[in-house]
Length: 221
Image 1 (cartoon, helix red, strand yellow):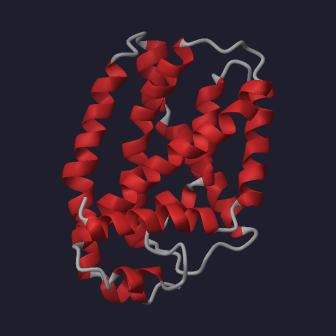
Image 2: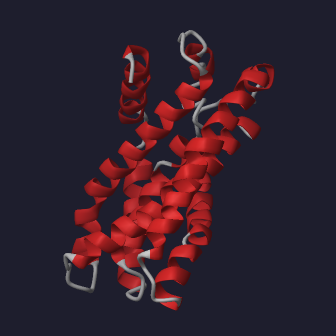
């Protein structure tokens, strides 16, 4: 990454850390702990990532407006919108890892099943099937339905709850490959395909859409 791309990346991380996300963080960690206790048939790491995705909903689905004037500020950088989208997506992946690592001890504490090393491999396989489809969908949402105003006390939890339902839907390929077909390694093939689609299709398509819809994005409600 060049210097401006690194600056955008640092801004993404710093912006998330300065957001008023502690109430949402605590709320969904508690939801995750409840699900771990109640749904003993669901692996804790699947709930872990679902909670992490919900907490980071705005990072995925509203990449240009986590603050009211973010889009205008990004316009000042002398890098293409394709590069901006790519760096923002990379920062979201990094934040997903960080958030998952932070809340993992709490969910493991409430899990009725003992932790085993194989769970790490299962978690990685699951993550490979989820990250890129979420980024692809979020990039499209960010252009088609941007939310200029920062989330209110009720808006963020509502959007995060919707994210949980979408994550449940996106988990179906992993469930079919791992539990129905008993071929978990096929998740790597599926993950590689979604990764290629995200990099080769979603990023350039989103960058092109931003370039041609600046007026709409600037007038977002």
